[in-house]
Image (tube, rainbow, N blue to C red; front, side):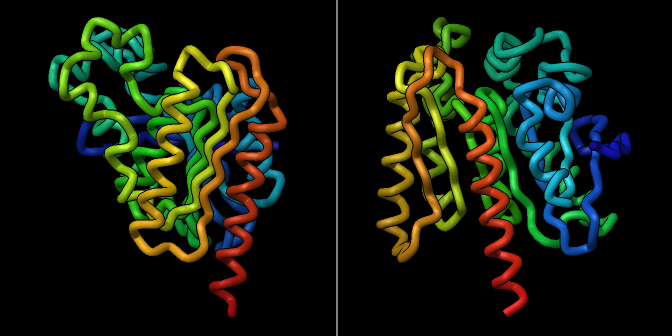
Length: 258
């Protein structure tokens, strides 16, 4: 299904390896799909669902390892513990991710990939990263957060530092205004105690408020609180997030042609 090329890229914060499945035409859109590693985003069920759906529709897909994951594990440790240790040491992994993702977008566009538009999708910790990327880069037209982390204070790995103001400042509500006018899909289980269903609902409300304050006439924001046990999210909702982005891409391409 996938025709993957691998490239090494200097991002300004160190080199990364990214994978790219090219689209079928110059007007294809580009999905940046994130889970933990690029391998998981392309080849591990159910994390590969968004990539598969975009590829089946003829679009391009790119991914790379998150900071503190895969080849980006360093002396700060791996996973969310690595995120926390790096952030508290002043080596912000989320700012690092944004710079890396922007470099990948630049590289793809330079190859003529993604001319139809850029979209992003992320699961859990990667959902936070994808939403932060959208807030930081206006080229990202739409983003899907699947059971996303929205406030790191809710996670046990940050329990010892959750009182720190800089950790509180990481909450995605602080980027609500930057996301106004973007197509956003949020889905989370109704009892997700791992990343906090309540925190995700709060973010959704803040986004709606920011859109209203920004004078948005027609919202492209969806918030789904679904019946799911724990931090699990049914595959139908992973598909729904990807299909939401595909619909947005189709609408935008039609708009460009008018």
